[in-house]
Image (cartoon, rainbow, N blue to C red; front, side):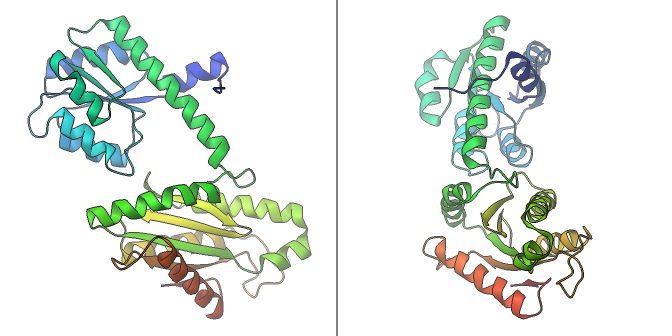
Length: 306
């Protein structure tokens, strides 16, 4: 049974939805934007190559694509979006004059096909329908993949997505980094301050980690108990170290008192690892990060180890 928003919530969510229109004809961009900007947040671009990069860095809720464009065509643009981890779930609607390429659009992974000349009401209603489906899917995913206490992703989300990220990195011959981290002396914190305060700290630490991440593709998940895992696609060891140090400093900078800790405040120990071409499945990188996390503990805690 599909989940339903209250009408007022749905209208607010739809109005905040981001649409990217990609067409190399200026007139088409102007017409489409004029129709849709009354209802949604609309951005435009005239290049398939640039659109793919935009989708990676500032993910839209839906993409409208023309088929025939200079550079890479709409079909190829759609295929690139569907084979990249960060963008594969973005719904793509083709808006084009070429009615004979409908089958190619479905094969590329499109959710809909609208032929020019555009009927404004049809365009709006089709886009709205697909956005509604996406919003309902996002809501369901939130319920399934969000940790109730910390409001970051849960272990199920991590387990579901890490294989996709690793396969994508191996296929594209790119790096990704994994940070495994544990709140220092958390058992003792619970013993001293109680489990209610412990839960407050878990939530605060989780949100601080999440706010330390800059890119839409980066994410944190509660791995278990007081452990968290951060995944950083397209990141080498140097970049991962920078992120890890930022997280460590942000946690200690919260200034949450901890009588049992020699640092006097709540701190975190972080172990990091990057993908090796010899890795078989994600267990290898996880084990390396886990060993490094325990090495960070052995080195005195409140530190980063790679």
